[in-house]
Image 1 (tube, rainbow, N blue to C red):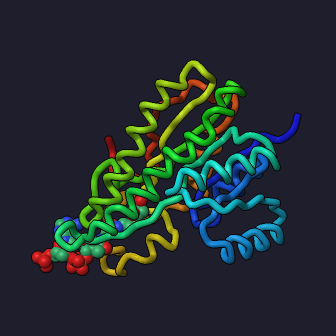
Image 2: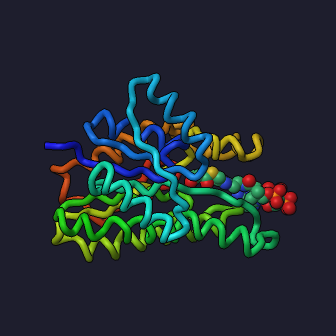
Length: 245
Ligand code: CAA
């Protein structure tokens, strides 16, 4: 049987790259969707040197036509996407008093519109295959809210609402839809937070450290497995005990 195709948005980033490598280790042909061509090509080469053969595909995740075009091309070149990991995300932090509409809109567009855009573009072929895994990478801050992140918290909470609705629509079609809510993971995104604030956040994590991207990737692998069809509409928290609900 030919390899199943996995598409990871934001695949060249910190958590995304770990997910790509894990899914490749699991036997998928993995395509990383990117927004920055130069970075993506360098990343692809570096991965190749480590023995990983990834496809890369340009996608503006906030734009439906861009997603549809890219996903159709992936289907022609590699085959239909059966595992979709919606991982692309950005932050534009600021207290509400200072937040601009652009900061709000950009985060909602990239973090939430994207989930509609890519899922919609993959859905018909998943329905045809009667198989699919959609895994939405949300955040602890969608669950608990975060000072300075009204935009990000809203988008990330919205992702799980989407998960629960689509999971119901696809439950009888062999397609599962789940959310993973990482806490603070040691990536560039976290390193952008001012050091004193970052240190304070770490103090609030019961396990006493930031998470590792591989710890998220392992759960993606678990949810993507073919024999894991009974978990759907779930939200799996991976946050070192920082938020329990
Ligand atoms: N709760 C309550 N009050 C807080 C607070 C908190 N968590 N953090 C700051 N404040 C208070 C400060 O004490 C300060 O009070 P005073 O004015 O009375 O002195 C006031 O709020 C302003 O705080 P700042 O000086 O921090 O304000 P700022 O405008 O310079 O910065 C900010 C605001 C950019 C949002 C900054 O607070 C910040 O970076 N916060 C961290 C946000 C965060 O956690 N982002 C996560 C990014 S990573 C990610 O999102 C990945 C993921 O999924 C987990």
